[in-house]
Image 1: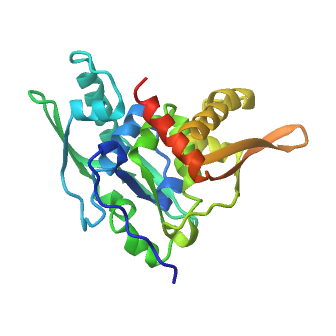
Image 2: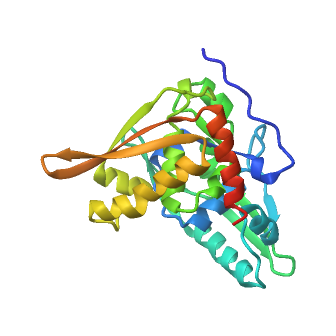
Length: 270
């Protein structure tokens, strides 16, 4: 059985905390989220301890969230914006569809409490998320689709919600045997065009040129600049009709990864 590395211990810089999530969640769940909503989820995920046996209530302030995400605080504007986004995440549920056809209705948070005097937010993840966020090492050892770990900084540095989604999906295919064993060889992945649009919540783009310009090209630029992987995409055609999209991607070499890490830091200071 392949060896599975332990997840890193907590670090002092909150942007360097690790976001770990099951690949089955990444690859099969269909949530419609804005970039801010995605960041709230990544931020909350980064606070889950690798050794946790169950969800604990997570508490943080709006100010802390804004500072970590590189959001400029202007009066009460950001407080109201983050409050709306947290509510939106809490209100959303989605069907996760698996290879055997099974569908499961899941939602992110069970309860959310906000203290308006201090701007403190308290979140408890939904128990429906437990299989995808808790006990990932043990589940990887037992088989299944494994899990993916990424530094919070990387998720936050990606501005487009499409870039965030495409990155985590591609990244989930760059680990061998369901463990934290990096694959450095080039990897190839194909999607039917309709399936891809559903995966990244881009159904509104009926024309491929619009999808290419506003989703794929933006994701390619952002991912290649601030993340630890390099990707490219090409359309799949059947005759003259574009029927799908293909991705070629791989982990960057150390020197390129370090440059991307610095670019991610710079992105949150602009």
